[in-house]
Image (cartoon, rainbow, N blue to C red):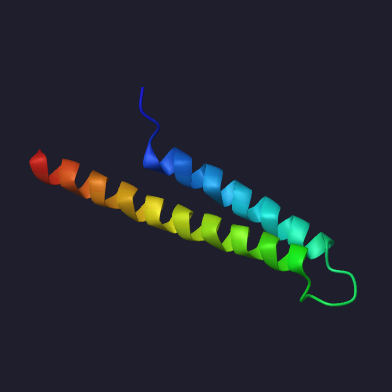
Length: 68
């Protein structure tokens, strides 16, 4: 059983939102501490992956429609 790209994209969007929330909560005096930047980096990677998976899902749907 395969997991669809759209389902994976939703998963990565949720993870990106969680990492963003945790990064905001970890800010104390300044944003430029290691833990906050690490969480922000993880959130960015998750958002980029989600966007790429959504684009993949759209291309797969378009190719399936052309075959019909």
